[in-house]
Image (cartoon, helix red, strand yellow):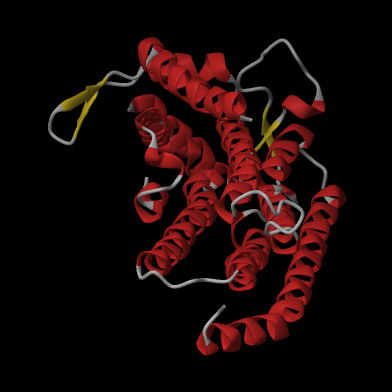
Length: 165
Length: 164
């Protein structure tokens, strides 16, 4: 939506059908995100040991940065056109290069963020197996085993709280 | 004929064009190496293959986006002289959005996996009490809610696939 506003007249959104489709897409996107948030709200106690909230925020942070950046650059580009400046193709080309260079830099930061903050391999080390399959009781494969956090007492307590709720 | 300010801009941009491309390549390499180390650290502790595969699918969003960004740096529109600069951006934008959808769906699968599977999640949701959000919308966790949420997620994904 922000990108559509930034691009303004003469953009791909100039046709009413395109505009309507874009609005519909974003409405469904927002509803999907809302649904995901509600699933998290409903299961927050069970999901607490897995830090799902942090992981979700990390992913949405990259997406938000991308959208905001697209809005800012689209807005500047539109302003240059509106002023009637004869922007040469070289300048325009490099304008896009700067935009996507910033995008690549954000991804570098994101890669480090994923590695050290949100998705650590250490989550899967030295944990005791306390529960066999939570969902599928018929399978005994290693893949289906659930590993508890380092403190099994607190883990089982969380599950008990959830059942009480 | 461009004005002297535009000519100055053009010269400045031409001068820095290669630098931008080099920086882009460096960023892509660093991201790929960090992602490779991340995968390696997971492979060293491959204790929960299903969970870790889903996590790696979500995390792979970063290098894939970085590489698509690099494609845009190298091909802003040069091979498409007849096409408006902004139009080519939409082509790569579709792939960016597609991968975003894939990562979000993988994340959803990860949540289901943490909960012990879809059926288990549904069963757990059935036992939750309804609650109100924003003072007006009542949410009834359970079968109906899961179906509606699934419909919207499905529509969102199909929308991007249809455009592609």
